[in-house]
Length: 315
Image (cartoon, rainbow, N blue to C red; front, side):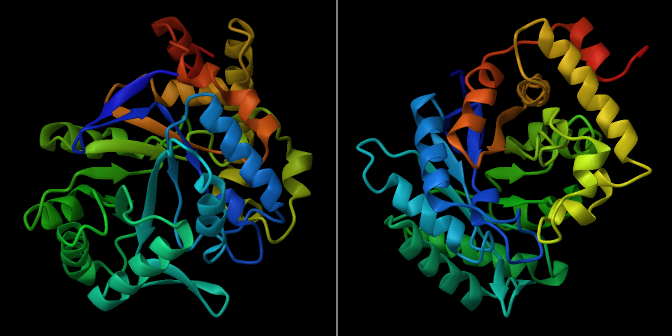
């Protein structure tokens, strides 16, 4: 699989990373429904076999379950992938709670290290800039963890440009993790240009829009999503957005036919068309899902004409 320099960190990462949100399973407001841990471990192993060299997780995914499964999966690997995790959002009493106080982040880091079974986390990211008034305190806590050797690199997720500027004035922001897909392009206007100017590395999450761009969804399947699958209550999966999003997935399918690629693989390749994006985070729950996306998504190069068609120009 192709690799790119992860600007800001000096790491060379595969252009596709393993996203461990879904393997946290259901039972919480942003869960993906039931999940078998053996399937999760098999999916991680298969992704590593196909060239993925980093895993992105967080303590809130399944309220610790995702990190524990990642830890089990990599424990016996002779050559371990980079492990990226987050702080500032965790599960309490069945719900996700945002907090950026220094003591909380210090505790969360220790708990993540224990669940993952590692001595240091390769990239530690503030999950959300919530509450906004505490982002400086949260960032200072991350800097302290970096100095202590608990984490090797620090970054943030879901920050806007003004928030990035505020914390960048305190200590260098190495990385940003924003949502980015064919149907979620808001970062193109200001955020990506700022990252280029400041040398901030970018890894994009939800390049397949939480599965909506894989070609496996229809209006009927969306309507049948279980209530503990968060996708049953987000705007991308509801009208008036749903019809247009399904049409986008159909364009991805048609484009993929020319390459023998799945719609999901083309969706990821579209995100990676911009070299500013060092990597795309792709969630897998089973090994067969990995085979449906990799290695094609990490190697496919789209022409300008294909990109225009995928984006709906003239469609």
